[in-house]
Length: 256
Image 1 (cartoon, rainbow, N blue to C red):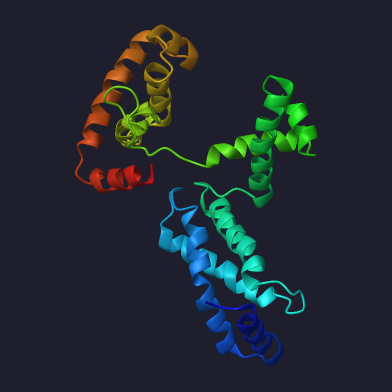
Image 2: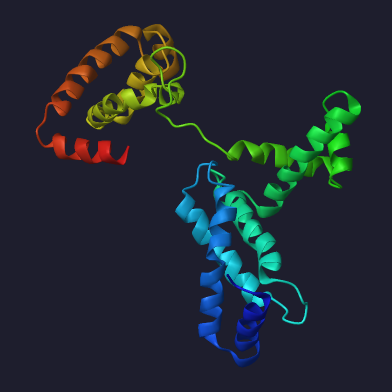
């Protein structure tokens, strides 16, 4: 069992003489304390071995910061440092989405304030009361409450309702994507037409104008419009069936 005299001797060797072997021995002797504290947090979703490693970092910091003239045991000084390091680990790593440290800290204060004010007021506190209790602005409180939603996330494979997952609730089929190939085909066919015929086909099939309305817009007879549409369709079919058009169509689809 380590005595205060043993600790002080090793601490003096390290702090005053720079003896790293004394530092290593102190850390090894205090590891049972680290494991004891780590076990308190072992049921919060983190492996015990990971928590022991984090606690060891806190122990090393405590050894490095220890004041040999304070007259206290190293364990007394190290325990809160070890626990604090483990708590910081949960605060920094436990959030599914990284949020600023000040938001995390304010969220912890809000949790305590809500519990305290609910008992005091006999009801849930409002934003203004929480802001006053935590010495924050109402906007900061709202930001922290919003940030709290990042503490945990739901897997896309998580069942929601009957035979559905979260992934199935995201997005929807893009009708424009489904018609992309058709648009590429049509654009290739349209290149076979003169400017006036392209205008007529666009008015008829994209804007939905009647042949009479197109005739008035273009300034030709309705019968002429009918003949031009029929001839344009034939030209477009021939262009789209042209083998030389296939590579250009594939490039257009990749770019779409």
